[in-house]
Length: 222
Image (cartoon, rainbow, N blue to C red; front, side, top):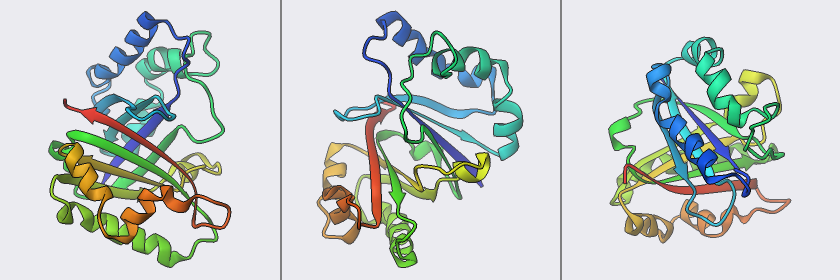
């Protein structure tokens, strides 16, 4: 079982360019200092929406995350230098929504995790019928075989609430990887239930199954 961790950041617009450059570079060398942090990549959101950056990475076990990464000096003294709200050098603007999500996935194939990345965070209502969630998971699992140029479609339940004992804002995270923009357009144009939900921004409103969503788009490996 692979653990995928995704953090989303809203970086202050007044951040000096040299500070932003250091912030972006420090993620590219995380694995040199903490080998247990795998596939570390920081992406810039191409959409004119929040957040501005996405950090994706992988752990092979919860022990690697909780017992190695969390107390590691590189995490505490370098990453949190810019991300810790108590740090005077923090450039991360806090929001009321969750900044990180975690999910477990089987058969993760990192070699396919290259191209146009799309990360969809969903807050599914606690009143939503189980049938809605089951249909979402089922369709997400088979999409990459239906859409030419869609290499990865990996959806899981956010586990941050279970890990930290808080009420998490997001309930599900969905990673999508496309060969190019044409493949993404093909997916969004499908005559399918989930594509219709995506085109309609998940029909976010008080009485809908999805109460909130956040979507980021960025290139990885290009």
